[in-house]
Length: 302
Image (cartoon, rainbow, N blue to C red; front, side, top):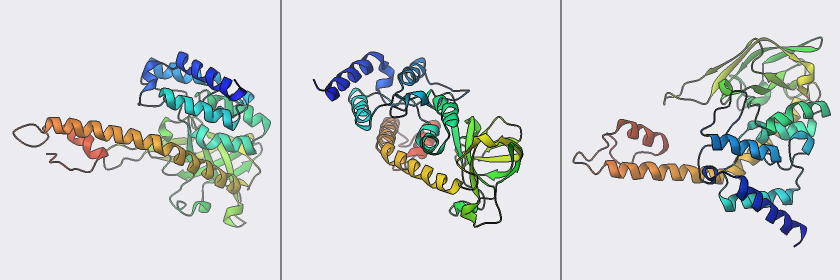
């Protein structure tokens, strides 16, 4: 066998031995974090085994928590996981968005500090970009970071920060210069959500549930060493991160779409069973609510 065939065989054997049966069918994916919640022991075990192998971020360098695989080897790994039905071991904004820009723009110290915990699922990240006046006009961010010695003092607000209330850290665009063109006065900071002055408040949607939050910063002190790239050069990093976000969304769209279709099929099958009643409608209020969340009504729900 050539090197690629050998790698494929070894990868298939390792996955077959180490991927728990429960993780070989569709289901929830772990997000990790300081207070991680797992749907089962197997979900936690699978994340830990893949992280120890470096395969949660297979192309990252070994000293950054990865396995140092080539793109070709990573493609083989992905193929073999699909063949065995292996579930993704870890979802993470750190993996999808932050990690790649830290690899590109971060110092060696920043890479060693921030990347291994991402790869191991120990830190959960959220994104602090949008503001009440800076959504489509992202460069208009007004959240201020004023330099005081070795710290920045951050004040302001972010909105639509997905699952900030469950996250440990936030990567954040802040304004560090108000005297230049708006694109030129932005910096990219990493902020610990446990720091004094940080507050994340979920924003309820009409369904009563929401993954979105408002995040407030009130005199939050952030070490200058937590700035990625040069001061006032954050716009370049912000754009690069958005490229990684779009790429992740496009490559993950298929699996998410398939999972959504499976969920819809299951619910509609349940509905058809429940509709086999003299009333000709769904008597189960919980089932009516679940269907309404994932599928426009095509049957009499109530």
